[in-house]
Length: 37
Image (cartoon, rainbow, N blue to C red; front, side):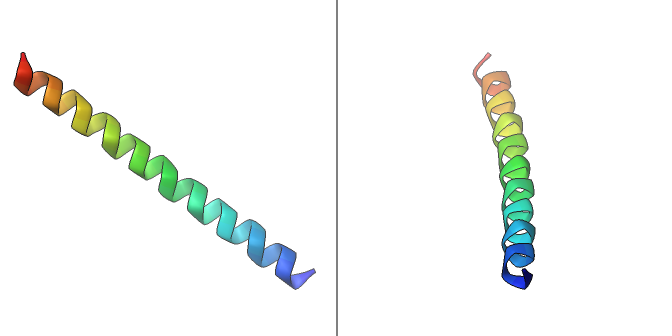
């Protein structure tokens, strides 16, 4: 039981990190397209 809880916690952490990375990537691509304009 304990290991399952730990796994789901780690998965949630990874998903939130991925969300942050995707937001950051979106910001970067928007900035780049602004520069190229």
